[in-house]
Each structure stands twice: as structure tokens, then as C-alpha cells.
Amino acid sequence: MKFKGYNFPHPIEIINFFQPTILENSIGLNIKSDEFDLSTVSLSVRDFVKNENAEIVCEIQCSDTFFRKIEKINKDLKFDFTIDQKIYRNKIEFEFFIVTKSKSENFIVNDRKYLLEKGDVMCSLGKFSFGGGDGTIASLLKFNENKDNNEIRFSLENHYVTIEIPTKEFAKIRILKNNPNFSKIFISSIFQPSLIHICSFLEDETYEGKEWFDFLRQKWTSLNEGSEFPEKKEIPNFVQILLKNPLFTLIETLESIEINNILEED
Image (cartoon, rainbow, N blue to C red; front, side):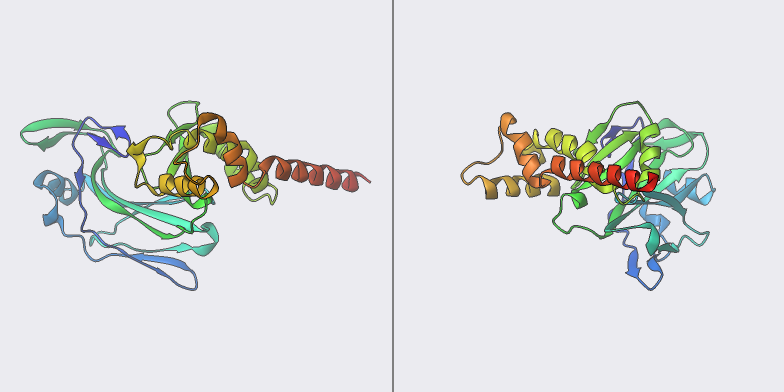
């Protein structure tokens, strides 16, 4: 089964009714849910949870700060936890799953038996977000760690574009993100080439209706009346306009760093 852009060897249930409550307070964000009704999932998944061979978890991510955490549901099948406001910025996302706690050969669907590894997704309960969606490019690009290989990988299947960065480089970025000059350099080194790649898909109607696609198409048509999407040769200049000439910003940032270094030496 294909789920989140990946092919899984076992079926994954999709539950659409689950609705947690996400409220902002003086500390940060509080996420609560009523007791999860196990009768809404298949008997196989229900038995896994009841026998403590599977658990309900929430994956929390903020692409702006690279924060990522897994929260587990408590024993009465309710969520109630708070995310400190210092560790997220702009938009934070919550995705709920039922996942296996150990390896098992007893997952049966329609009389067919499947092998599950520890941490395999059995059921998706939905994705929710708080903040973001502010009509900016940053809110439509999400950065994740790519543990599978040493290449940057793009996923265009959701309303935002996921840019997966190899583990080693991703770890370095997480360290650098607190540097005030980081965001300006980041725009030139990652945002710019990523957008050039992404904009090459603006002629593909497959992605129509996705927020990132509609946003970029709208930006293009507002600058180029009568044209639906940019030709290949027009994309680099279009991205320059979107990012407000990132090369100039990069040069100014590097000059500022060099001047500060000289002053410190003196």
C-alpha cells in the first residue's frame, strides 16, 4: 500500500474522525484528545493495542526550528501534553498513528498474514497543524531528515513540499539554525535550488489543488499575465524574484561576517 509517498508491504488503515484539541496558552501549545474509541479500527489493530503490541503516538514537527518529537498516548487512551513555545516557530504539525511496539508475524487482514517490524505504521489517525499557512514560501516548505541515502529528496504529494536532507547535513543544520546569519545563507544554499526544482513541476496538472502548487502558480500568473506556468528557462529568474534576490542577501551577509571577524581580531 502507498502511504505518505512510500510503498508499504502491508495495508494501513486510515481513520478520518479523530479530532484532537490544540490550544495555545502561556506556556505553548496544549494537545488533548478524548479517549480513543478502539471499536472504530479493525479487529486486528484493536487486538494489537489491547494486548500492548501496538500503541497510539503523535509525531510533532516544526520545519522552521527542525524540532521533532514523538509523544505516546497514556494508558487510558487519551492525549494530554504541552509543547513549549520556545521550540517551535510559525507552524507546528501533529500527526497521529497506531504503530507496532515489537516485531510480529500475526497481523492478519482479509485472511492474509503480514510481517510487521517494530515501529511499523498500522493505522493513520490524521494530520493537524497550528499556525503557519500565512501565504509565504517558508510555510509551504518542510525540511526532514533523510536516513535512507545521501541525496536530497523531494516529496510533492502533500499541501507543502517536504525536502529531505541527508542525516549528516541535517544534524549540522540543526546546530546552525540559532545563528542569526543562518537564515539568509540558508535561503541561497537550499531554498533557491529547491524552488528551481519544484517550479519545474508547475506545468504538471497532477499537483493542482496542492497549496504549494496553487501558491506558486498564482505568483507566476500575477507576474506574467496570460501565462499559466513558467518555461524551463524562465524558472531561475522567477525564483530570484520570489526570494528577493537571495544572492545579494548572501553577499551582504558574508561581507558582514568578514567585517565582524576583522573587528574582533583588532
